[in-house]
Length: 386
Image 1 (cartoon, rainbow, N blue to C red):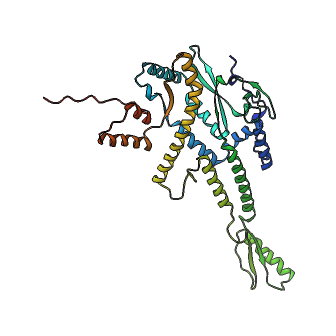
Image 2: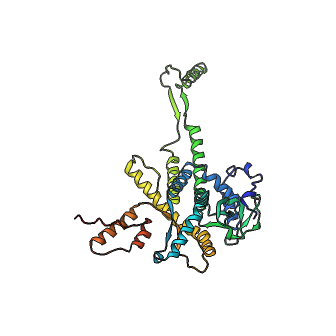
Image 3: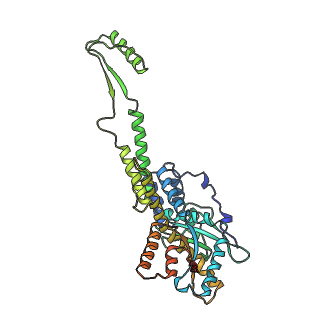
């Protein structure tokens, strides 16, 4: 099999900085090309934007870190807990995922699909028929016919290419979703335009211009003397001014310039977009341990939602086809999932089980195990003392 990952070629794209001369017209043209399935230039731009803005980069990194902090496990469908075939399938799937050498890196790349709209991992097979690696094929190598056409490989990541090499989707793990970068790219452009205007404002008014108003009816000789005095003032000198003279400073006009407020607003919009509306800012003035803990829990909440989506993708692309191949005729009784750890939701499930037990009601251990992600065992009863 000829793997795409081993034959990737950027051509001259590595020397192309898409942020040069970026304006709203150019951005819209890239996005319109993406609607037609020509993603090369758009995805190259998204890649640069994600690494060029402090707020966008920070939100992506924190959201990715929260996802990668989750462990993974293979679970058995609750209705099949007592079926020996289910345990065989679970053991097989654990072997499958343990065999993937770069699984963590693969999940990290698959995560980029949430921001860029899609992501492809190519399955590389070992001699024993299991997946040994899931290699990323970056987004700028892909094209399709419109929004819903079949995926095709654009060798060389050529701009404007309309057709490529067809692929077999069975050889890939593919995530498709709405691209957050579509919104973030517009915010990025607005923020940089505001920053440029702010820089211009500071260059003009940061060190205010000084004008000396001389006394009325001053002779030409006195005007030259006043000019020398004003130049000394500008060079941090000292001196005195004649009666009725004055010093005028050129300022930026009345009121405070709005650039800081506008950039703060855009940063809030970036955070809202990247966190699904849960957070408005990564940090607030005076925030301490409680605020930091709340933000950490928020990113874990987002990570659990991301994990559910990615687990579903992996189940359909890896679990189902391999179980059907190695356990023909059997229903799927085991599945991969990310383990969320002992979260507030998990604590509540455990507390509910304890309260139900106190009320004389038992919770099915299989269902409790599936809800919490923990393998439950009974503590042996301590024999009564004689």
